[in-house]
Image (tube, rainbow, N blue to C red; front, side, top):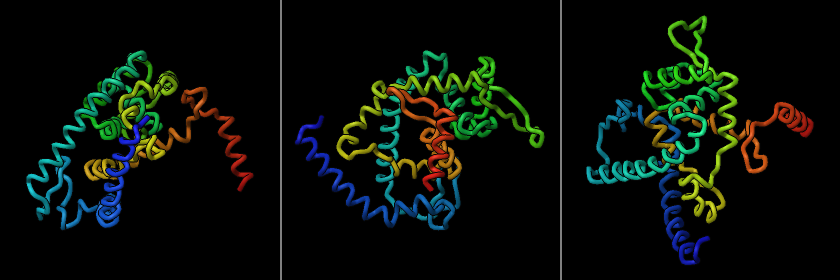
Length: 252
C-alpha cells in the first residue's frame, strides 16, 4: 500500500500531467491518432522504414534526441523484464517467444498467411516461416494453400495447438509478471490500469492501422472468449455462450 506522502506526490504529479494532456490532447493527440497525418503535406509524404519524412522541422535536435533516447532506454528496460517473465511462463510447454507469438496470432486470425504472421508478429518472413515449421513438426500448426491463392502459405492451429494455447492461458499468473506488479500502484490509485494511449498512438503511426486493428481484435477476443474461474482464465464453454446470447436476446 502507498504511504500518504507517496499518494499525495502521485496525485500532484498526475493532476499536473492530466491538465497538460487535457489541454494538449484535444488539439494534438486525438487528431494525431485518428487522422492520418503521416500522409499530410505538413508532416511528410509517408513512412520510410518505420520513419517519417518531415518537410518542416517543428522541433529541436536536442528535443528529438531526448525523446527518442528516453523511449529507447525505457523500452529496453521494460523488454528485459517482459522477456524474462514471458520465457518463464511458456517454458513448461517447450516453446520460445516467437513460437508462442505465432500460435497467438494464428488463433486470433483463425488461420493466417506467413506474411501476416511476419507483419503482426513483428518478425522477418524467414523467421515466421522457420518457427512455424517447427510448430508444425510439434503438431501444433498445419500448413495449407488456398485455391485462389497458390503463392502464399497459410497456417492454422491444430487441435493440439489450440489445446496448448488454452493451457497456457490457464497457467498465467499475474503475480509472476513484473510489469503487471509495477503497474499495480497506479491501479490502486486510479481504479484501473494505464491505457497507454500515447504509446498505442506512436505504434499506430509506425506500423499502421491494420496492425492496431489486429492488436485490438486479439484483446477483444480474450474478453469475449474467456471467463475467469477459480482464479484462472478458461475458454468460455460453447453452451454457456449460447445460453448467454439467448438471455441477451430475451432481454432486448
